Length: 252
Image (cartoon, rainbow, N blue to C red; front, side):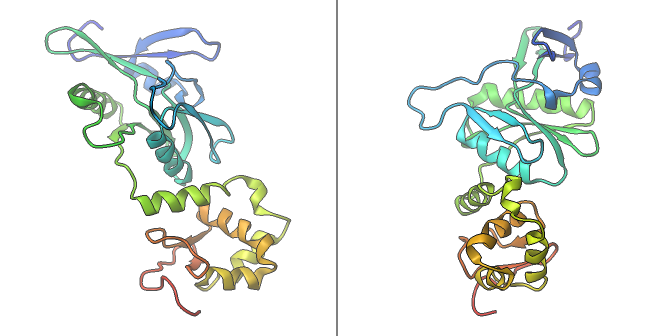
């Protein structure tokens, strides 16, 4: 870092060696989505949820997660059709502040978009999490991302109902829940017009076999339903692009 405001990146290469490189060069050439965490997630005594792994339906690999708030945001990004790659803490950013002191920050999340750009993000459990240091770091990391055409965000916690619904659907994200050959096609046909969940499942076959496939299709966006109210057996489910506004229940 030879000037105030210059950014550098620190990361582990594929064989685990520490690399420090000019940020602008690293952003253009390094596949951060394929790298392990540059530093371990801290285990904080007293927290109910500590570091763990999230199996990504997007990549078919595990992503390191350091908190429940981060796990929820990983879940959202894993369901985003525009996201092509995910990683936890793959890069540390270094820069000098106006007084010439070296500062550093490790964003919690990296998401590679389908167009090649990327998102660096932190997942605070509440707006003031991390205090002034985190907010100042957010300003610097946002500038570093803007310099290379990327985005930085402090991701807001999800509404409790939405988070609960997504966690339920996430339980069916694995390909095995698509079921036997032909079942997905039968499910999509059953919900070609919006109808209550249990009715469409029954039309496609035995609900015990069909419902996991429906939830799998809902997770992957092949079907859609309102997720701002609790999921239940008569929630309306419809094809991709359908809006359920005003049809949250009742007879089909």
